[in-house]
Amino acid sequence: MSDSERHRIDTWLKHVCLVKHRTDATEACRGGHVKLNGQRVKPAAPVREGDVVELYAGERFRKFVVKGIPDRQQAKETARTMYIDETPVIEKIDDAVFRERGAGRPTKRERRDADKFKRSY
Image 1: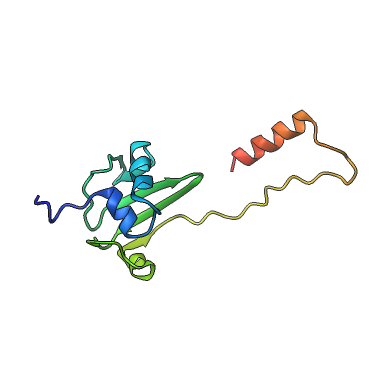
Image 2 (image 1 turned 180 degrees about the horizontal axis):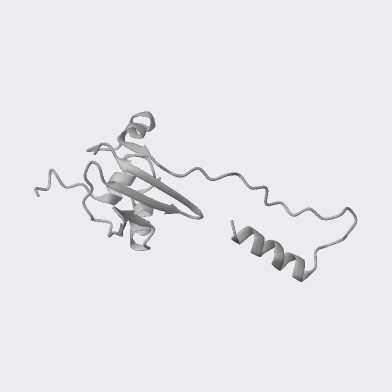
């Protein structure tokens, strides 16, 4: 494969506006938050059309199919045409814990229970 055909995963993520900075994409790859066709990859892994990219951004999971490989940074409207977003839709769950009015501050146990509830989603 020649250098002109080789496109790195970290630069592809930057060029299609999925991350703000290339260093963010590089750190995500090194931290194991980026998968290419189901395998964790290094920042220099080659990307081709038809590859499946899975990205874990914080608590959020996103899945993309590579549709195009830009050679440089794209405008956001153009960048959105370079991939197909297959991210599963997550139902919005009302995770607010309501307490009776005038019940005072939550106890330590109630705070722990609320934290467990938040982490389960």
